[in-house]
Image 1: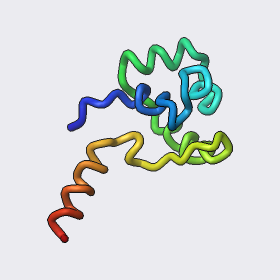
Image 2 (image 1 turned 45 degrees about the vertical axis):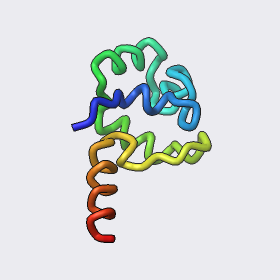
Image 3 (image 1 turned 135 degrees about the horizontal axis):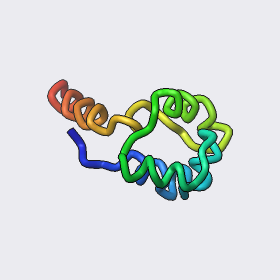
Image 4 (image 1 turned 90 degrees about the vertical axis):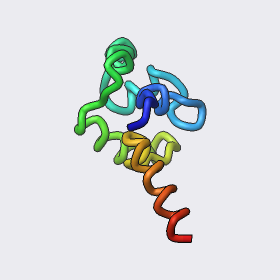
Length: 82
């Protein structure tokens, strides 16, 4: 399992850029996003919303953004297949 903080990942410059913008996208205040950061969690409803509204914010979101271990496993599977 990955140690990546999902909120840190989603607020990176190539994603939403900051907690306020991420919060706007999912309907939370910046302080609520900060609390989610401390817990390193997002609800499934928030994940679904980000998948839906990400393009409106110019952000490409995939399930791997929420579950980095999936992209790690996918990369390992692809290298084994090659």
